[in-house]
Length: 221
Image (cartoon, rainbow, N blue to C red; front, top):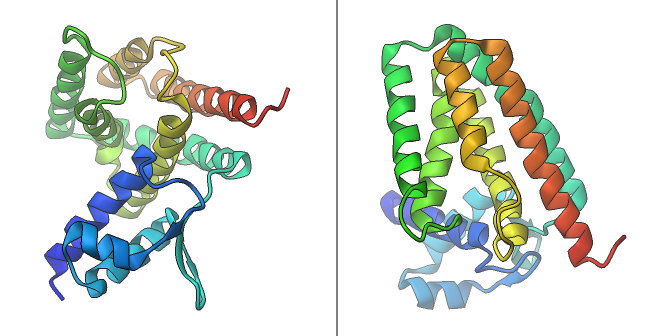
């Protein structure tokens, strides 16, 4: 089996789950995936096992795979973990990050800003989603702890899945671009306390906003 095929397939299936193309808690039919992507069963299974390790897919003994459900309890856990780990990683990055880290962060933020300044811009477009993810991970990349970055990356993807599932059809409720700008200004100033507080507020606000819309979608008061 080609590792590159499995890698590509993993990315494609992850994006399909993040975007909501695969409905939460739905059964995954390997034969359909094999036909749709034009690959054999082997890389399909490998990709699904990888996504199972990331929490996007559930492997059921003798029953195959299904898309992980999207529940308020899971979102609460994801938000709590992000709130602990990302400010911790950012504080390390501000203390340890060199000029190259800072320059990469500024460039990534500039790319995100350019997208948001385009005429007719709306969130959730593929270009914005990718650059938004790059920006958040660039903030943390100077922490010097690869495992921590990996954990934060997985949690960020989990959080983004909820945001995209439940906020995509709703107009922006807040100025996210301003929040990003405030964070990076504090980071460049090497003001760790302010930057971490702003990032924490950013994470918690996103979590609480999604929770509110999840409750509304479920018909809860």
